Length: 447
Image (tube, rainbow, N blue to C red; front, side):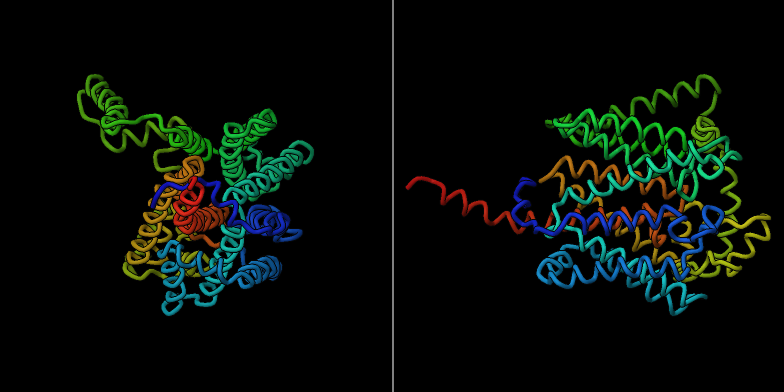
């Protein structure tokens, strides 16, 4: 596909009211992140896995009905989106439906599949060509900033609600926990960094917003969010500009990454007289963030889940059919540990447990296709591709410590859906616009 400027997409964008995009994106994220809007008076003390309440079903049902109506009334755009969509995204959804056949809780699996399908419809409703490709991330940025601003006020005025004193005074604001606020602050910081670097007018406002989001990130005291945000920002800064070019660019990048690693190995050998092991690396990283080498006891959870995986290694226990309220297949983990986790604290372990080895392979294929789509997007819109790549990196890295990918209405899972449809739809629009360019240029030549 020949390079096409992102400006060619403007003509393919409809006049869909901005408030509809804000309504779909804003409320979908707000319902995911704020328990006060979904569990009523129970508030932050409610169970984090209680996602089947009548109120929650009514809220998301209304949003998904609106998304379905918007998708249905524009069949041409919907068909173009479906032709360009990540095919493994559909395969994963179909596999989750199929897992109802062997799921120990088929009704729960069905409800979670409906949520996944609804998120897919929501992403399609606000993807190109019906909405400008950059408007989705702009809306996400605004929504996250509003949630952080309200959380800051709550933490300062109502500290009993917005501050978790048993975790060293970490702020959680109006969100489920400090890690959620850290994740929100991290993504918002990345988006405001982009706005600051790419907008001339009002750049000082973007800078102030960036500083505020970084402040909220620090106050959340989430080491994982802080680490992945640094990685995401660094990746965006490296990818948004063509810093290296020429025939030796690959060798220069390899040397820049390999030489510090080799010197680190040499220094470790000279000081200890032996080569480093994996335990040395994990200890060095986790100790820097004041964590234990097994990530605060998560290794115990993983060992117990392996017992479940061994019972159904190929097909899994069924999508969303393991971590259930009121017992279920995970009850033995709660009895063994003396407390009940809400997930494995590793999204890929949860995927392997619920969807089996076959499901994990399909999910990895979906992620690989997403990476290829980002690389294609870089040919036509380098800055957008850099931001989507940074978002993708943060989601995947975070998924190793917090189960979020394919976890129904978890915030990172919603963001992945929105990003995936935005990328593939923008590529489809650019491909449709490309054949028109030669004709336009030839007609502009003087006779």
